[in-house]
Length: 255
Image (cartoon, one colour):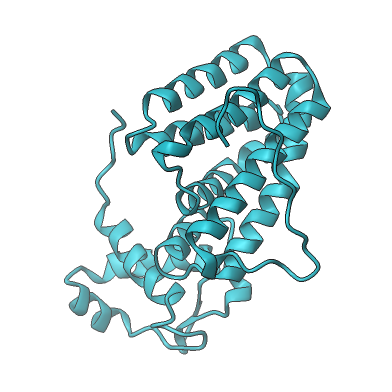
C-alpha cells in the first residue's frame, strides 16, 4: 500500500491559497492580505506565510513587490506544468477548454514517446510495464487501478531515456491522472481497457514503433470517448477537431 505523506503547515497554506487563486476567489490583480493579517486568519506564524508566498511566486501565481505587497498574477503567468497547479485545477476548475488542452497534450507527447520507447526500452523497463499491467488487472475493482495505470504510462515515458521528458514526469503524471479520473473505467468495460494496454506492451516488446504509436493513440481515443459519455460538458471538441475513429476490436474482447 502506498504511504501518503501528511501535509506540512507550509503545504497546507500553499494549497489553501493556491485553490483560492485557481478557483477565482482571489482574482488576477487582487491584493493578498498582509502577512500579519493572513497569519492570524490561518492561525500560523508570519514566517510560514512568507515562505508560502515564495512558493506561490515560484509557481508564477503571485508577484511579491517591495512596498506594494503581494498580488495575484494573471493566469498566463502561472506554471501550468507544476503538479500542484494541475491538482488544484482538477479540484476546483475543470472546464471543457482545460480538458481539451490536456487531451491535446497527450496526443502530442504520448504517441511519439511510445514510438521512441519501442526502440529503446530495456528488458527491465518492459518488465516494469508488465508488473504495472498485472497490478491493473488485480485492481480493476479498486481505487489502486489508476495508480497502477499511472505506473504503466510512467514506465513507457521512462523507456524513452530522455532527460527532458524525465524532468516533466511529475507534470505529465498529473495530466494523465486527471485524464484517467475523468474517463474512469466501469468494471464492465475493464476488459477493453486492459486489452488496449496489452496491445501497447506487445508492440513495444516486438520493437514495432508504428504499432506502439497506434496502440497509445487508441488508448487516448478511448479516454476521450469515455469523457464524452460520462462528462458531456467537459467534452466539447476543439475548433477544427474531428471525432476519432474507434480502435479495432480484438477477437474475444468486448468493446
